Picture 1: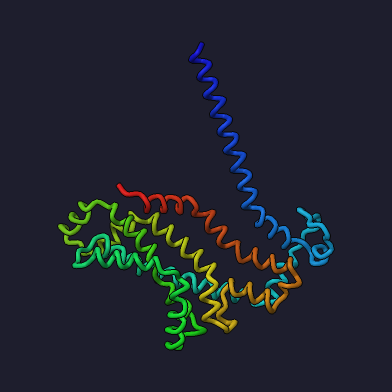
Picture 2: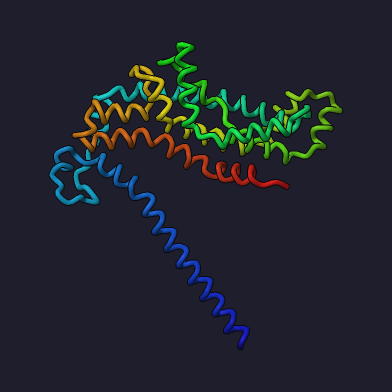
Length: 287
């Protein structure tokens, strides 16, 4: 009887813990998702209906898509999307090549001073990005690359953190595979492409997604290096809308533009969320 009572108490305790956990998770989800809900809701309200609300309404009975059409008419939003896509794809592709080769060199190759070089390399993570912005700006300006895609792309084609993450992942691959490949006459480059890259695919996918998000949300550097509207990214486009478009007056249209810009990243994360979690956990675990 005592065993049955203890078992019942344990089940009740587990249910109580699960209930409290789910309640807290639901509360946190509502807290996090509410700004997105409010953004979408505002984008569906008419200009007159929004301005006539003395008390904010949490729903609308007359949704409209006119704000989305207005967002594309008021500013060249489609051009901002194209510029951002070019910047994101080019930057991410070049960065993947750079960090893969660097991580392979630190993880697999043997050369004098490798450990000291890697420690020195990691020390760069202690330097805030804001401190190198001025140096990058002067360099790009002296190379006459302002208001150009190379000027936007080149300062972002490497990352110390991503190299470290990929190096840790490469080091989990058994040395026996490398030695067996060398016995078969495989070059280092072929071994990297045929063995290490496929094994590290989850981490590479994670890095790709994180870099795409970083590029898509990039604001400070594009704003600093470009003053030509033909090279504005979506983040700068939002600021342009707010300053010179309708943003200060037509809030629903402004929210519609923000929704359109946010959708690609939300869809990307939802499609690859499992791979992101798998890549991060794999890259941070050894053994």
